[in-house]
Image (cartoon, rainbow over all chains, first blue to last red; front, top):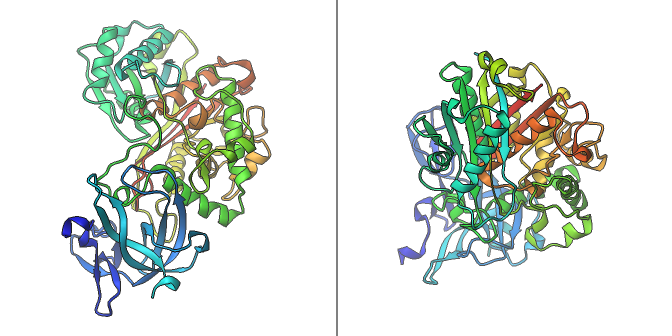
Length: 135
Length: 384
């Protein structure tokens, strides 16, 4: 049911079964971007390859969104997470308890529902999840 | 490069005008600016019209109704910076000698496309399609800023109290009822920690300015001309994730430093400022980026009332700013421009007139493009 997954090109599962984000890496500048760009914004080289980002990053900041566009069920947590490669990524957070989130805590990647299509179908994509909540 | 002067400004009131199409609002503002300048409309050689959502040829449709046809009219889009991008275009075409007399116009009617809620963004942008709206993005910034600098919810609310107070003295503002910290904090939360009253309203308006070259200012200016001392537009840069990624502060800093250099002035020389306080957190961050205080001290300026009209530092947003005067996207930059021009001419209501104002600064920040520090930032410095 590929129509239920949003931007499947941006994440995949590694050999150890962990969900990983797929970034762009430029050897010339040793720079990473998420997602991959056509040309690297540091070197302007188009010799950019796709690589997994580290499996976890650090929670930079977040909010609980309580009013949003119609396709998003509120409330939901929206966060920025810093990866060791020097990339900051925005995504929703899957968590049992938004109040327990803390700046600086380690976040992994999971796949979960982010919104609904106009016909009511759940649409899933990459999300963050506190590492401590990973089974 | 030639000196450029603003010789006329005009704007409609800010509010909800669902019965007035954008080109109707725009023609009123354009006509008011031409009338204010005292020149014959036919003298205008080129026009620019900033807008975001108003469709095809809104500048041409507006200007035909005041007889301004035939000249080049260029519609300009730079997200929430569209109005000042229009000013920048008018400034540069004169500064670099292509034309002598130009009209900068900005307009938006949001009521016709939106009953309330967040501004519609580009659905094809990755972050927008996973749930980012402008309130959410600013809320993430606010959360981090509060934790880093020990800023309280009450201080975030105090920005709105100042804004509403200034707007209560401005007959053209959208929200003119003074408020309290309690009222701001008791409003529904849109995205933690931002309540509805910490977010700018949905509204409509148009504003315009007539600009001319130094060669013509002596002959044309009927009122005190205001000189454009600096005018800089910058797109967002790819921003370092180790710094302030997704944070327009870097862009405001970079653009304002260039504008200060062009003007040969520094932040300490500014008497009055109109800045892009789309959310209350933005005012705290922008006063720092403009160099009015050190990083993390934006809240202190509010506490000490230094940035209120009559305060001991630069008066920030005497119009009420985006939070209370209103943020009709494409019109905003020229509403700010009209306010600074009138402040320098000492034409505004006495209670909100900044005393002895000689130099004013305008900062407009357009859009949010994650991994870039905003879409467009325009900073202008005006002097008499």
